[in-house]
Image: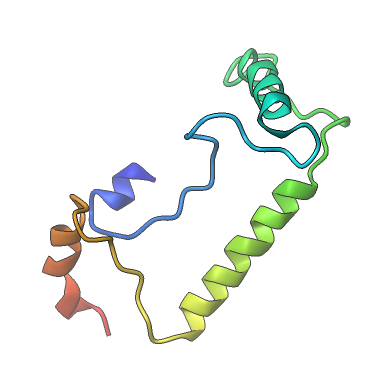
Length: 99
């Protein structure tokens, strides 16, 4: 995603980059335990799907992205970078290229 952002395209990143997820059952403590276990295999040969995973949260994420994507595709408003973002000036340079 970062390579796209460096070109000035606003991005939406939905990951646990700010620490453990705050799970409905167990809060951040349970989220940290899940994250610790997941990271033991992340991008290694043991990194594989597990039938015990509860993917309802992932389905909610997909619904969120579909809703946002639909509104962007069918609307006239373009996403904007926040003031102070290092990417805002890059985006402004290409404003004339968008309709």
